[in-house]
Image (tube, rainbow, N blue to C red; front, side, top):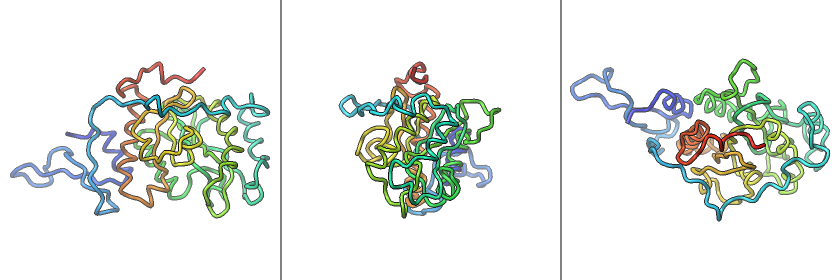
Length: 284
């Protein structure tokens, strides 16, 4: 089965090497189109990536459906805030002890009217220093993943909305030593994320990492059990995948993240089985 051009770009961006066998009696240079993926380039022992079969995508089972987020819509002082006021509120927040050791808050980046929204976990040391989510090696990997789908975090108004991405974290301040966030810290910061989602009004959310999934889906299940399905957050389709920082430490898992991005693209374009286009419109 041949890969289309977009799939080949995505494979290359994810660090996957594509192998094509030569035709019988022909030199390698005259080999036919791509036939299989051999392995993750950085990890020789990684298992091969297989093509995603055309099939209906199961929605999350009703029994496992997450409870509605209690903070949506944003309540109290955040209700009705626009982008400038919300950014100012985040910068001045002292709701938990994380404010005491932060260099600066990490608000978000991308186009404020994006069709895609990426939600990560908590800022790291470099994010705390630069004030932007997903920078450094993890950010570079994320950008390559997005570019493979013709998506960008750039706030350029000339880019069509379908290619725009807005990126935000569940926490706006770095936990000391990059430790895991506490439930209290996640709860205190959640209204900011909820208001960002309300303002962006994305058509699809990509939740990256365990704490992003916990915040949005109210689920403690491992990512491995939640990925591969279409979830819902306040009526919006949500796809679960691994955080880029995790992928850098676990190279073979890049193949699964590639599969998750393919699923997200299928859902966004209305090609996933059982997904109606009208279900992908922003919640009213």
